[in-house]
Image 1 (cartoon, rainbow, N blue to C red):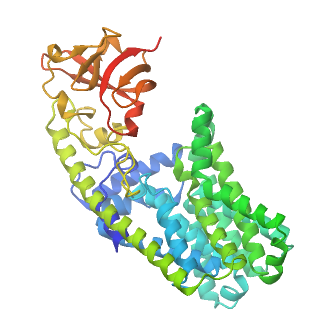
Image 2 (image 1 turned 180 degrees about the vertical axis):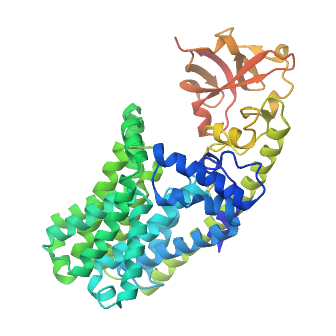
Image 3 (image 1 turned 45 degrees about the horizontal axis):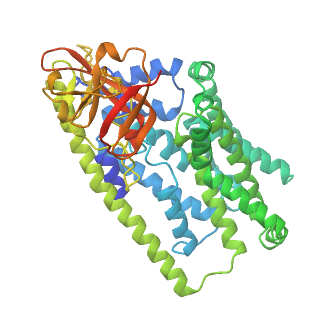
Length: 500
């Protein structure tokens, strides 16, 4: 229920606007859905051919938000149940609560995962992919004895699962292929048909022009990151994958892996599948990195791997210890979710207020002390970087597509800004300080992207910058110099100079 509440309270942002262009002024749900479908059709040629995106008109334009929220909440519950079944842990056991903990705290929820488009691209495919994997790894017990009509339905679900997102389909196909090869498994006729349906779904993505366009024109973001950021994002986002690999290597050196396969023969194909799929998913992460969300599937699979292996190799904890551990997890998870609901409600109100101010602004300048950038303890807040770091052209074109005004979100300290009230920096006369904020005339920031700043909190620091242009009270054009380090929290500038 709390997940449903968080979904329901999440306002439109990022790709929700991207897929909803030219629909803000439409009042009929059918007209709105038709406009969004046209956007989806256009993007099928250059953005994506995934089924999840083609489904977006139904949830962005036709149905009430609560319907999408309930379905998404169900898919989260479904994912947790399937993860427990794959790990072979009982409902209510310590292992099942560890999975609940990892789902809540290890997955990259903070990257806009409660918006419609991102949930369709990650929350829904993960549940359907896990369902398909559960069928394939437990084929004899679950699928083989089903009636023909039920098997046809399962084939249809497999096709839809393969069509949802290539970031899930490729690892699943790689994992099952490796599992069959390494275990010398000869799939039964129905088993192969079910797998083929999943592959056909994936081929529907491959058949779209968008996949090839994006592959050829995608900017390799990861290549341009500094070494420090590569390590931070590469290891940080895939920490469960690397952790599971180290854990299994430890078991091999302790000569416990062979015993594990003898004592629990069913776990061997599961481990092979998890490792092969995670390797494929991690390779896609490094090749096509666009954000931590690309580590979603590998993180989910490795959560299953940790619990499944740990449940076999470690002795059961004492009942009292198990109760303490489960109680701690329950407290942390529910506190986190309650806090997330409260924060998401703040976000909703914030978004509504900024939309109102933007529609009333003649030049797009909005003065609003919005939620700061740094990561909230809720881990779920959609707006960690929403109004501060994400590109706002989607937002602006959606709400004011007719006059082409762009939103510039500025602190209220700059409202009715008088140039004479700013103090020139000691180290550079082209830079000024206004109530702890760094500003400069528009002409002074041309071609500048790095700066040295002195703050009361950090001393002198070199950093990249964001520039937010705005009009002063005398209509002169100025820019707010927003240093990258502001993403670490509040700060107070005392001096600055451009990096030569």
